[in-house]
Image (cartoon, rainbow over all chains, first blue to last red; front, side, top):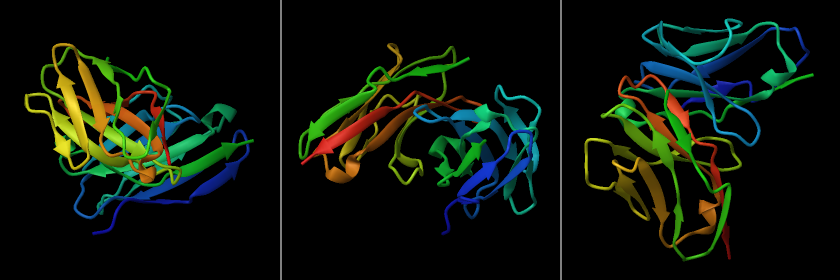
Length: 112
Length: 114
């Protein structure tokens, strides 16, 4: 079975721009979550999608938005980029949360 | 809101020895799930072990085991026979009963020395 894949692996954007990050969930998983991991810190929950509906959101402003598609892949969109948005963005998928999440290798976003 | 605390920013252990990583959490929920994840330099979070709060028996996965103390809200990870490949960041994580978010601790950097 394939794992979680994310694209791109690295990205450099200018402050004020918009960015879209993509995630393909593990086969059979219907839930996708996004996390932001600043350097040297633990990941912070952004939001989760279950069957194309948002199913929980962390303490992130509305300029962070997402989508989940019928094939359960997902996008994370960030508008009006700020320098503090520079981080590793992790996507995780699951079928039953009690069994844990499968993570991708992340997208390293640098905002200059 | 739940919080997860890992009080050891860095630890080191000699190859083949045993090391224990600490984790405490705070929650008002009775049913929840706890996990330890490993993050090597490749950046991918890898699930090491999981524990369901309603199970009193401590989880074990090969060389990895946990000491789950529900009343004390403690969830430590023991790595036996440490290997060089165990070198990584280790994160403790809490999953609420609704299962819609993981709350992570700040991580412990483990170095296994030859």
